[in-house]
Image 1 (cartoon, rainbow, N blue to C red):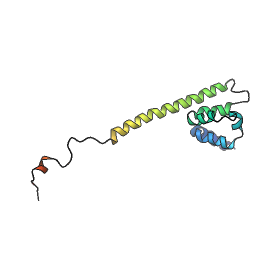
Image 2 (image 1 turned 45 degrees about the vertical axis):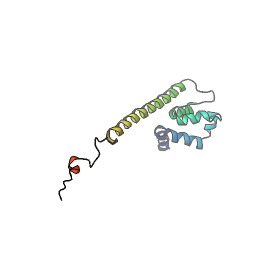
Image 3 (image 1 turned 135 degrees about the vertical axis):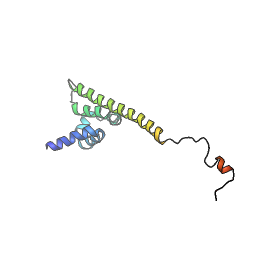
Image 4 (image 1 turned 90 degrees about the vertical axis):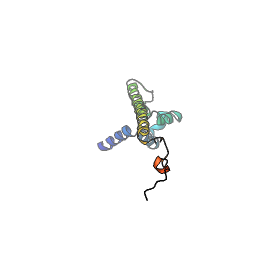
Length: 123
């Protein structure tokens, strides 16, 4: 039973969208937490998955109370770090591609050198 809990925690940490999808399909708590709203979990799934997971985990019928706000803030920080990481490495990937895979512009086309125009051939 302990290894299953660790596997679930690892899934939630490494693949938050998969975990949210699994929670939506398999858990009865989903309807209680989101109250039938479709927009908030959909936006959470698309843009802030860690925050949506934290909200799903800390929600109680009274709402989010006490130290639960710290967990929501932690989820938001994870999402912002994830987006920042994506943007930084996206820029670096573009620079790498431009540096190593761009085609250089040649000054003169191939086959127009002086030896080809003189008509002398070594045959």
